[in-house]
Every structure is written in structure tokens, then in C-alpha cells.
Length: 326
Ligand code: FBP
Image (cartoon, rainbow, N blue to C red; front, side):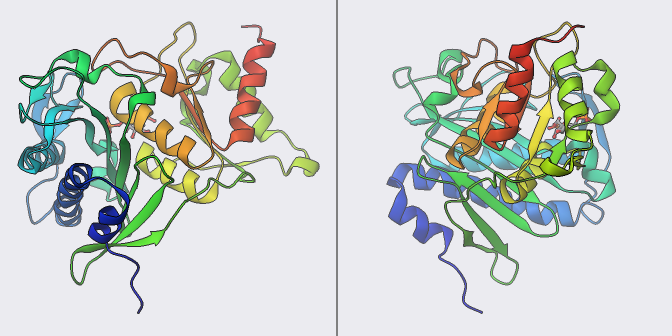
């Protein structure tokens, strides 16, 4: 079998030495998590730690394990100045001489862990703005337009690493024979004809009226536009977005009625996925504006998200612009 280019070789050819080191360190972390996810039973990693994280969520053992693995590997890269994780209340200085600031969701889709459904890791990287020394919140609270690289790894029927450093989106599969990543897709473009919408429809009555109108439009019968569209929802953003990159369609976690912020976190869920989506020719909004333009104000702030192929996001914006009676 002809294997694609290795991750190390690809990064050598496409990224700076420091950014390659940063991405290769995160990639090593995802290999360890890929192994752990497939062996949670024998590694006694199923179930919760009994603790509650800064989000008010019960911490799963695998959340904790994943957080420590990714943080340790970022530290060992020597180029990671600061680290923010969904599992950590505050930010951490990992190397005072480091260049990069990493914001990460170490284990996305925690609700899928114990049912052996896909989970993943999501990350975004910016350059520090403070002078060398301990990092500050300012280093992390940068808009998505400042991202220098972002990506995710999905631990599903296979393990795939997906990232961009600003010139397209590339996918690498983990080869279980030699535990190395090899390129399988390059310059991925979100198909514009995807007939899929993805959200937790059980929450529809709680979502903002525009979202309800958009879902009604997706599910209306209209042969000419191949509606109704199919509903697909895996319950892990990383998996629902991976499908969107390959099959098209739109993923939504809108704001609830009378609110502006959805459930998902701006710095380590919405911004990295928005960055990848724009690199793949798609669009990402919070219901009214481009996610990459939003100025973050808190480390763990939440954000509404409508993301995927350009046409469907534009359709959502049309409904928003037209205004909907409550
Ligand atoms: P975490 O598991 O990292 O907390 O992520 C949140 C998440 O699981 C997303 O991956 C997913 O899209 C969403 O929450 C599912 O939420 P809900 O259960 O409300 O549909």
C-alpha cells in the first residue's frame, strides 16, 4: 500500500521549525489519546473522577487523563509559552521563552466516552503578545483572525488528525502498524451541496426563533432543492464537524431564546473550527457575525455557532436579517 507523506515531512515542507515542533508535540499527544480511547476499559479510564470542572461539568477520568497528556507534551515542545484548557480554570505558563499560546479542548464529546462513540481533541494556536516571562490573559484573548494554526483529532473508527497553518486544510490518518500519521486528504474543501443539518433537535424549542425557522426550512418538502435535508447528530462537535468537512451541510449550536451565547466555548471549540472551516471554503457565524472577528473577553466564554457550507450559513443569515416574530 502506497502511504501518503508523513506528518513530520509535510510540516518540514510547509511550516516553520518552531510551529512544526508545536504541532508534532500535539500530534504525539493525540496518538496517546487514540490508544487510551480504544483501551479505556483495561486502562480503567471509564467513568468520572467525581470532580466538577470550571464549566460546572462532571470531569470524566478520560478528560483528566487527556488534559495532562496534552499539557505535558505542549510543555515538552519547549516552544509553548502558555496553555489554556477546558479542564483548567486558569491559564498556565509552560515555557517563559516560548512563542505559542495553545487553547485546547483535550477531550471533546465527553458524553460519548462510555458509549464508545467518537470523541476528539480540538486546539488553536496563536503567538504570544506579551514579552517573554509568565503569560497573561491578554495572550489568550485574541480574536480568531490571529490564529496561526488550528486543528482537531477524531478518535472514531480510525484516528484522523486535521489541521491548517493558513494554507488549506489537510488530513492525516494514524497508521496503527507504525503509529505514524500519513497524509490522506490535502486542501479539503467543504462540499457546497451537502443536504445535511446537524443540531440537538431535542433542544429546538429552547433555541432562538431564527434557528427554529431555519430547521423548519431544512425539513420542508421541496423536491427542487432536495429538501427535506437529513438530520445527523453524533453529539461530539469534533465528529459532527469532521462529517461536515467531508460531506458538507451545516452544524449548529445556536443561542437559546433571549440569550446571545450558545453552549460551546469560543477559544477552544468555536474559533479553531471556524478557522478550519474558512480555510476549507465554508463560513462560521455566531448567528449574526463572523466568529473569527469576535474579540474574546473571558477565557471560558461561550458562543453560539452556525458553521459549515457557505450556502446554508448564508441561508441562516437571511432568516436572521429578515427577523422572526418570537
Ligand atoms: P465537551 O464534551 O468538550 O464538554 O463538549 C461539548 C459537547 O459535547 C460538544 O462536543 C457537542 O457538540 C455538544 O457538547 C453536545 O451538547 P448536547 O448534549 O447539549 O447536544
